[in-house]
Length: 336
Image (cartoon, rainbow, N blue to C red):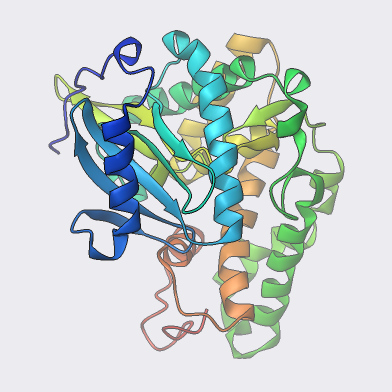
């Protein structure tokens, strides 16, 4: 597997203020985004342009919806606060170049170098590499919480969505609804489905005993938002992007995506957290959140008769690795 080596980052001390020329170029790129030939990504929330500036390669995120605009402003605030302590961060994070809060909104930051790996590629890494990644994610989550303490920035204490920390039970309800639909129609003969989803029906006590909100979380520490590099043949986690979901959280929720990379990764993360803080994480709650999130993604698309999305496909593959939603005997294509 060939990955980028970790390159030198632009010196933030040399780029504290965006120049007039750079700002003008950024605005022009955003205003002509429909003609842009370097659109890196087009999602439901944002479009991302990659641009070459005199000071380095930049990513420009342009929101598509009102919710995305709120996320953009949240991301800008968290990044600006966290950058005051970037020297101690275990990972590279985006460094803001420019922020436009009125008119056509956008945020521009230096492109974080590295390569993305999907879940299958991560699982093919050695156990040591995966466990080291899990430990690094723990270190990063602790660094973010220490860099932006909620008690000092109450404006970050407000959840972004109804499914945020104050009302994540909606996610569980979605998963339960999906379970009932699966077990009440022709698909109920799938024992794998019943086995994989039954825990959602009895897991309300986990939420009732969830830890109190005590930290600012990234909110979306999945592989899609991580950048990896290679050094001497070993793969390591190099950077984290997309802070638009940062909000009040707790560690079991923050680390949930590690469960998709293997139980040994979860064990390494739990051990690292204990070594750093003296506190033992609720491993059952961490794994439960991983499964409920995936069920919620699938259930939402099923309920609203939406076509398959990449995230729904990944969720399905994680929960039901032995089933194929395209084989004619499982969930038909485009119906989830």
